Image (tube, rainbow, N blue to C red; front, side, top):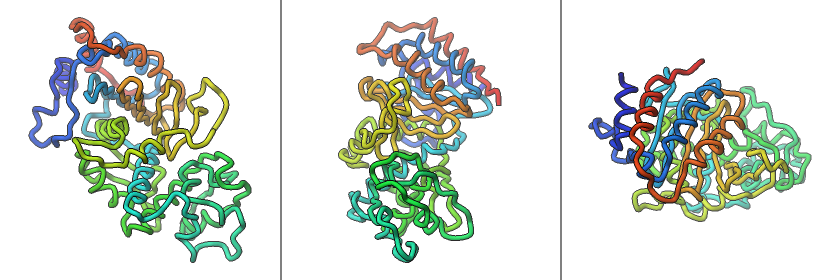
Length: 362
């Protein structure tokens, strides 16, 4: 019954949050799809395809012009349930780095060894000496393989002891421990974990209660994974990125950082049909269609489409991330129009009915 009620409110253009006195004022407004130039038929096609082709979809939310035009949860997932973000956490760590740079705590060209002189190898190789904060951000630290971190010694020490066969900045290697190092650096220079550092600067202004962010044995936020957020909280972050760091007339994150972080900083492949070969920024992936995203294992997505003033959030548990993202290009992208559309009450009712009976397969 709760899902039915939410769906009715949504497609009537009324926020389901309006009936909750405890909901923060940062809740995103709800509007009908057609009022924001989005075809309900396209959203319905996306929902049907996601339900049939993604094993297993957990939630989605579509924003246009800053308003939620569609949202849904596959039971037992729900509006109030935080979801593991896996590597989508990396984009939040990137934001912490940008804020620390703004605060004068570090610079992109700072050498990584500067922050951990007591944990460096006795005779650091030249490539390790050349490794910069920027190289960690762009997944071009110089590694050929990822470090397998264990509990026997500090994670930062294990990272610095790992072979660096490539000149930093020249070789893309997706590297979650590199993001952990960024988290450790932020903690080193600010005296706060990334979670605590972001709480007053990002989470609280976005109306996000301090979330769960798992830590290493050394008491450092994992950085590259371990963060849990609700679907709308991810969407607020996506809208902040779309607005280049502005939220309710406040500049939470520097415009220059958003532009740098979400632009292509390094090449990561040559396949034009792969959304994993379109370039990499500062812990953000470039996509086809001039979009960018944060993403994580099993299908956690925050996709920002500047050309369409849109954000698409998805959570899931699937092994086919490209197939899941392809549904956005196939069904939602064609649904975006420049002007408002004529309301489609019959299709809106069909979508309401469909959203009310979504169930995850696992």
